[in-house]
Length: 296
Image (tube, rainbow, N blue to C red; front, side):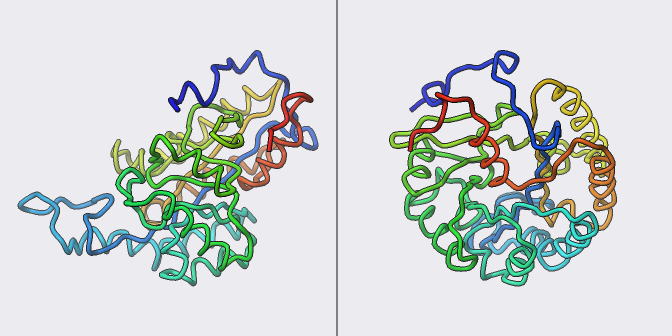
């Protein structure tokens, strides 16, 4: 199906009001992306261009750049989450569950949500068998956590034409790749609907730091500006805001301060709840007006 066949255009002012518990206006969720990069393949991203160009294998400097995030950066970020008592969503490659098991264990002990994020950090259009890749990722998360993941984020937000259909077939209830709204929306599939929960490309450290090459403080400034506008927008109907971080990017020593300051600003305001994706999903499904319930 084309994207326009999966959901109809819907201007946000024309929708039924969404209300969060306790009169809150904004649900904020933090997604931590933990990836496993295969040193036998071209690196998913690069911080250092090889002197003669091309894509050398092994690419030690770029593999090590990512590896630093899992060895050091994640643990630096974890102190911030513990300080602010934020329970995150861990978007994790299936292969990273055991490759970086201490990270998985720390997230599990804190009650974080585990989201499927491909088995490896590879474009889903280049995965030999997408259905098998999703199933393998689901199985390893389920075995480790004791719960089937309910949400999915494609590596690099990549999908094939069939991804939402396969996800719905395999029991997934929400997806994050469709960054097109400030409220959850419903996507059609060949079996049952799946919910798109607001994610972000703008308050995402990959976009800001690696593509747009901003200084580290841009993350704080942009996150606060985005929060204030969404908070204002939500005077009549609730909104959802996502903050996306990667341990090898925002976990770097010169950047973490600005992520911490963004969280501090958001937590200082009333009317905000810090939720995970599955909490947002349950709230949304529970508040949909009669006649709009998802068909299972």
